[in-house]
Amino acid sequence: MALPIIKTAIPKRRYQFGEFSIVILGEIESDDGIPYHFLLGIIPEGASTPELFISAEKCPGNQQEEGAYQMRIIAEKATQTVNKSNNWEQLDAFVEDALALVSKLLKLTDEKPMLLL
Image (tube, rainbow, N blue to C red):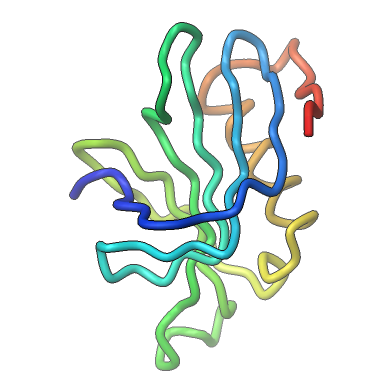
């Protein structure tokens, strides 16, 4: 596994969350064959590109009984499906659930994400 290979994407929102910058991407065209609906990229302080992603991806038709979208954590050497939901078609629902996951993953429970864009 590897990080997403993004050809084009439209930034939808940006946040500062503790020492991390967060960018939410939509309208994604990738070169890795994965149908990303949204991507949340986590950029550590001092870095210029995301080092960890949380995705909302359209599930294949035969796997949609639990939800039309799956949320995955994507790191350079590993990936893990977290959950499935129909809600992640909507940006606000994805952002809310993905930021909650970021808070847990990065132990930012005392921090609040600050919307920049």
